[in-house]
Length: 302
Image 1 (spheres, rainbow, N blue to C red):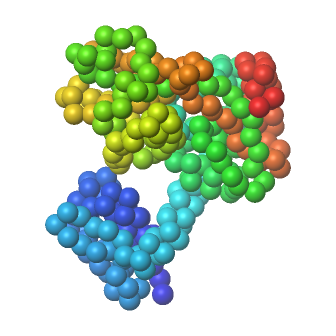
Image 2 (image 1 turned 90 degrees about the horizontal axis):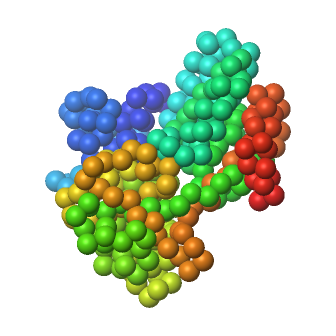
C-alpha cells in the first residue's frame, strides 16, 4: 500500500490546527483539496482519522496512533530535505544550530552573530523548530546543536547550561499594571494568559502554573497555534496578556509594554541550555564550543 507524503502532511497539519480550513491556509492549498486528500487517505487505510464537526476536526483514537507515526515520517522527510540542501551548498565547514527562542535580541542573536563573524569558512545553518523536531534532527545528525529552555531527555544526548533570560509580561500600554516597573505573580492572578504551543510557549506556561499555583491561585492559560509575536500584537485589545523571554522584547510595539516579573529570589527567568550528541565529531561544533567557553565561561559547570 503506497501512501503519499503530501497526504500525511495534510493529515498532520489538520491535527495540529484542529481544522481543515486552518490547515489548508497554512499549507496554501484549497480546503476542498485538503479534505479530499485526507478522505482518500482514510479510505486507503480503512480507518477514520478525524471526527468532523462545524467546530473543526478532532483525531479519533485510531487517528491519534496513526498520526503519531505520520508526524515522525513528515519530520524525517523535512530533515532529509535540509540535508540535501546543505550537501548542494558544497561547503567544507558546516554547523546546524536548532533553536526555539527569539532572535530579535539577546544572547542567541549575539552568539550566532559571533559565529558568522569569526568563522567565515563555516556555513551556519539555523533551524527554528519544535523540541520534537530538534531531537529528531540531533538523532539523525542533521542538527549539530540545539538551544532550548526545556529539558530534553534522549539517549546519547548531553547538555551544558548557557544563560538565563528574564521573563517579561506583555501588557497593553494603558493597563493599570503597566504603571509598575516590576510585577509579582500575585499581581497577575486574575489575568488571562495566551501562550503559543511552540518555541518557549509550553515551558513558560508551565512556569506560570507553578508560580501562581504556589501562591494558591489557578492560572487561566489559553494555548494557540500561532507565534508569540502574533499574540503580542493582539495584547493591546485588552482581552488577555502573554509572557515572553527577554530576548523577544527586541520586537517592540508602541502599544504594549514589557514588565519584569519578580520571584521571591529575584527576577523570574528561563534557563537555556545547549544539547548535542556525545559522538558528534564535527570540527565546526568543536570551534563553536570554544566560542561558548569564551562568551560563557561558567556555562560548562551547569
